Length: 114
Length: 114
DNA sequence: TACTATGTTCGATATTCGACGTACGACGAA
DNA sequence: TTCGTCGTACGTCGAATATCGAACATAGTA
Image 1 (cartoon, chains in turn orange, brown, cyan, red):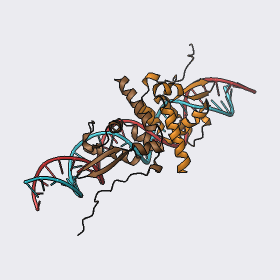
Image 2 (image 1 turned 180 degrees about the vertical axis):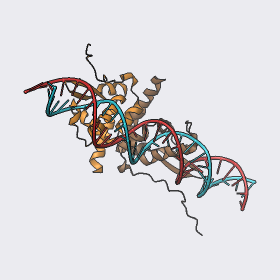
Image 3 (image 1 turned 135 degrees about the horizontal axis):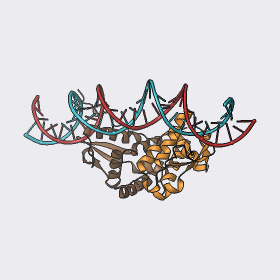
Image 4 (image 1 turned 30 degrees about the vertical axis):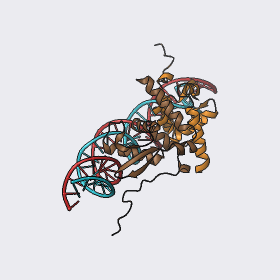
């Protein structure tokens, strides 16, 4: 039988026009997911296992799913890796200034609460 | 006996410096709470029962609590009413541009999704 | 085939969340 | 005191969520 080229779930990504701000806010209200997002805000692209978080791989996978379904990140296949990027342009197009304001707010918070 | 001046829980409000952006994002990621916030964004002060939401009073009270503990709203006593305001200046001081960006994003979303 | 690396899915468990009904407290008026 | 209004606290329920371990799937290599 002809092997399908994409046996994996094909990584559904929500369209830019369908982004829901409540979903985005919910996705970013979690510490682990915020760390992922903040990391991608600086680095253009990273593999799943290279984020500075201390959770089980399965848990991390779950958080990626939440971020992906909210439209915050994009993931593409590269060999046996899954490379993750921030959907910065899409978010900025749909919700101008939102991502910058959130990341800026997060940076302030990190610096003070210590 | 001297009647206590504040028999009610005294409405704890978090200090501006202690505002946590993750708590704020979580508070605003709920539809009912977003409606409350959006309403207060235009109106300076409202009583609890005057918001355009369709939930039971006890549920509404729960949402006010979440918003209050996240530092999004302020509530003060006025007779047997509790008047609610948006902590706009505090939020803007701690997280410049965040509230405006979120409300702006919410307005865009409302206009499209139907 | 076998092995390794990477990441996901599944099952199980514990927690949180949103909603409600009920009971109660505080205020204002009679 | 008694009543009605406004709003909260508590308990409860079902659903969603977070977390983990274990098994699975894919890609690459030997």
